[in-house]
Amino acid sequence: MASDLEKVIRAIKAPAEVCPVCGGTGWKTVPAGSGTHTDRRVTRCDCQLRARSHSLLVAARIPRRYEHCELASYAPDFPGAHPSLGLAHLTASRFVEEYDPRDGTGLLIIGKIGTGKTHLAVGIIKELILTRGISCLFYDYRELLKEIQNSYNATVQTTELDVLRPVFETDVLVLDELGAVKPTEWVWDTVSLILNSRYNDNRTTIITTNFEDQPAAGVSTSLSPARAATRGETLGDRIGERMRSRLHEMCRIVTLDGADFRQKLRSASYR
Ligand SMILES: Nc1ncnc2c1ncn2[C@@H]1O[C@H](COP(=O)(O)OP(=O)(O)OP(=O)(O)O)[C@@H](O)[C@H]1O
Ligand SMILES: [Mg+2]
Ligand SMILES: [Zn+2]
Image (cartoon, rainbow, N blue to C red; front, side, top):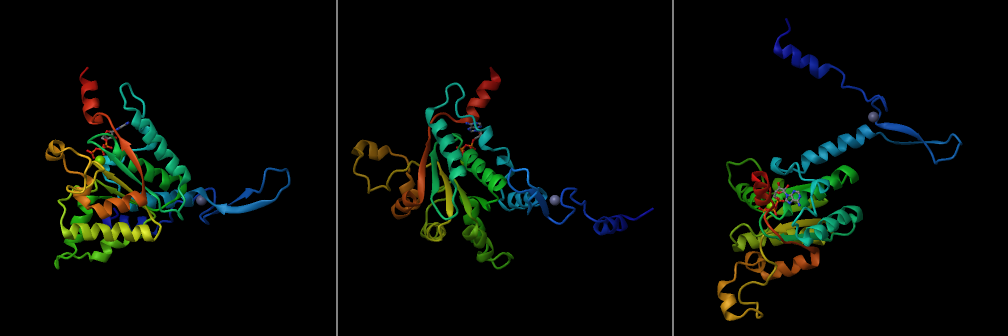
């Protein structure tokens, strides 16, 4: 009987399954053009594209709870759906089709809780990975700031650069729930460093937020004193006015209105 260790060693030494199309070379020949002549050209085999998509998907760090999110599974027009969902879905699909790595314009997806912001953002990057082979990275805003802060801790093995390098370098970054961390000088400095560097390098950032795209307290003049007293916190309050106006330069705005989709599902299943 082979020991477990022997089995492992045998598995490692066994030749990997060889692709029947390219015989493991990674290249295949295809007819060139559509004519009847017999010209052929060499192109990357699909097994290579699949392997690349797979490693890009792993590197994108999409949390398990959002793995199901795809543009195709986003319903823009269920009964009672707010019209803004259809427009947002169209904008997201166009964004994928028209994505150009030389143009850093991103999306700022704004909406109340459960309107499908994260679903759309994840749907976009999954499609960019699978159909275009673009490198993408998903980060929850709180998680990213926590990881950077942890890297200052001497007992933790990661450095600030380990955390930030992929954030700076990925082609498309999703920053989910911008503003969800209590704003401090450090938070503002860190977030502006990240967003400004990406913008200056023409890299695309897709941002979601629950906060209304309104100025910081004290800046707005359009609210009556009564409304100003009861106003909720705004994006301006949470990330600062300078960063908010920078986001307007960096991103196209997508607004989602309507009810919380999770509540909707719950009430539908009780019917
Ligand atoms: N239009 C839709 N079609 C299909 N599924 C949807 C739709 N909108 C939301 N969902 C689903 O509802 C759940 C909540 O959506 P999502 O997490 O994207 O909302 P959110 O706006 O990011 O909410 P939060 O503000 O809490 O972060 C997810 O499981 C998502 O897949
Ligand atoms: Mg979300
Ligand atoms: Zn192959």
